[in-house]
Image (cartoon, rainbow, N blue to C red; front, side):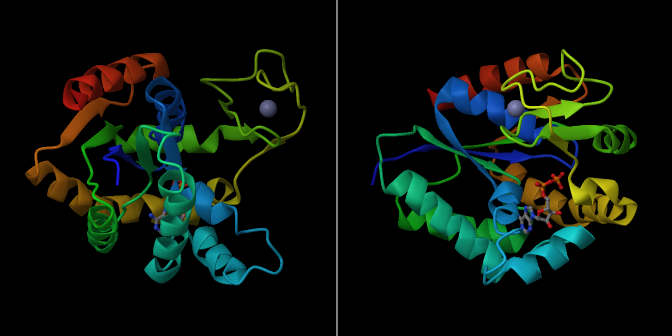
Length: 229
Ligand code: ADP
Ligand code: ZN
């Protein structure tokens, strides 16, 4: 098995993980595996085996049980990475792992395939800024481009910059105060332990996520290019 360049993106809800993943994947030709997106794909499937349970957890802002999350993520990586080794240089794990249990699963899954996590990017944003960011965010319903009422509105009001579509969506879990608070709590209580473990392995790059997206991106690529050599 080819050895890929594998990066984990860690940051609280609203830290800019999705935005940075989007930029980074193009620059380094990586596959972006957003755990939230992988799970949300099953959210609206009326015949889906996991639809009900996934909806229940996402709506509460809690981590979807590992049996399901691990299975869907393994399938996604097998299908998109291991099935065609030449397509990408590696993977961005966006929003995964979020617990030590998930970290251990990922270690095993990658090592079975002759791979490992090479770098972890921690996007640091103070808690008080996060609520603001989440409450203004919305996405194009067609192409998924992310926007924010205050910091990144569409150039023409009501029209997607990327595809011209005029319909937008706000995630249900961003509309619900309790779900937002629960996601912050899980980050503080569970995901920070993942960060600690990776810090002990000396593979964490910490970036200031309060800066403009382009500046955060520049810092990330600068650091990752050093590691990649
Ligand atoms: P955010 O970072 O804004 O919370 P995500 O799209 O990463 O957004 O996650 C949204 C929801 O998807 C989470 O609240 C959780 O219910 C589910 N989810 C995402 N990542 C994981 C994961 N690694 N394990 C279990 N559930 C997850
Ligand atoms: Zn669009």
